[in-house]
Length: 347
Length: 283
Image (cartoon, rainbow over all chains, first blue to last red):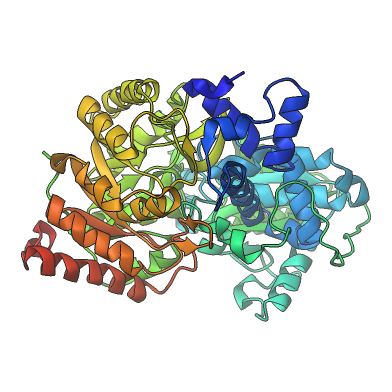
């Protein structure tokens, strides 16, 4: 049998071998058992020599395949990677890539299905709060390059309301998401971010330090990571990350499940606590912030498109007129300052 | 006819965004990874627009997968075409490789068997991509670690024939030629001699890692001497061609990267004479 004699056959065999979760040789053994290849398939379709036999040459591609994607997932889920530790994250990536190989030409979408996958993974049963952290991290990555839109500023309010009969139309910018979580993922994210900063010897930057109970301006009270640091995973080198082939020689550099024998960090445990959060990008910085249920309900309205009088009406329930007015003013100011209300689509 | 030389460029990486935009550079042009800018908004596109306002830019893709037996990815081509309309690059390039199978992507540059079947397959797809983009594209030779027993052509014969039949340009990666020559035991100068002069639009220069039994195309080192020597050989054969230094891991300061590009400029001046490129002349 020489299934690799055509281009289709060659690509198909090559692909099955380099994406086999436990490596090229075990991958071939599985194909032989399934009657899809014979034991000499690699040597009969690829050249090799004493210095570097064909199967080892194919291993180079297998390692590059796995480690590039692992690095990409680590870039999009940095706090999850910290929480899990290297070995668990590596094994989660192995499981994920087996279930969901990349289906988009851009690496940017590789992690798109990890939140749903994680929710059904054994790790989520051991640490349910991590499922919510995964949702938060993907949302942040997803908003990094979401469509731009001019945010409504304080100076826009009066003219815009005037043009709409005194009422102010409200809609969120495209780079905005409202999350309804089962755990306080924002608190966990902050804890892990601080652990990362401690491990790397750098203090948290002042502008990203949460100011508990402070006013919600651009950064205060919200967790942000600016610019490059929060960049969605991108293509780097042709094979740059595979440089570790040499550096991690001795068995650790392998796709498939690993057991490195090093102590893993204890998995975070949080009591279940329904938490709403808003995630948005202002300029090129992605922010998130835990919010009260009332604000979340109102943002749900705004995300669909509403008017300020409707928000005011909802806030008037159970409040005096004065307190309702004050609550509307406070929320509107917070949203304007955060940059989550869209200006242009409403004009 | 190949496009006139843009001079000496470097690959634009996000570690250098601020530096490139905040002060003048000694770089003539930038190459960007197309996929990293196929976004709806945000910082990457903003940076690209601002860099493009100051420099010529080339779009260099990694996921066209021109040699794959999967159908061409239509949404990908739409995004590439849109990015090209927005950026107005000097040209658009990708790699002579396949990058996925069965609807899935390796995000790697996988080698092709050099057969008549693969040749016809790639040529027909290059035609379709060029029609779709409304412009010829350039294809780059990749570093490889395996050869296919069924290959009936050398890599340079395969590449030259694709350029001849499809009208595409060649992005000749000098480092990749060197890496593959060491991994497969061929003469890198024979490769260069086998490429038609008029087909080469651009050179790539980069570093690699020696793994003992093979060289790995890591782009994480300075350009090593054997690659500079091969670059000189290429200059003698192809003349003045746009040259670009890639450095993608263990990324140095922008000034260090500039030094590497200046070295390429000096070598070109020594080999071909100190003639201003159009970019230099216009400054």
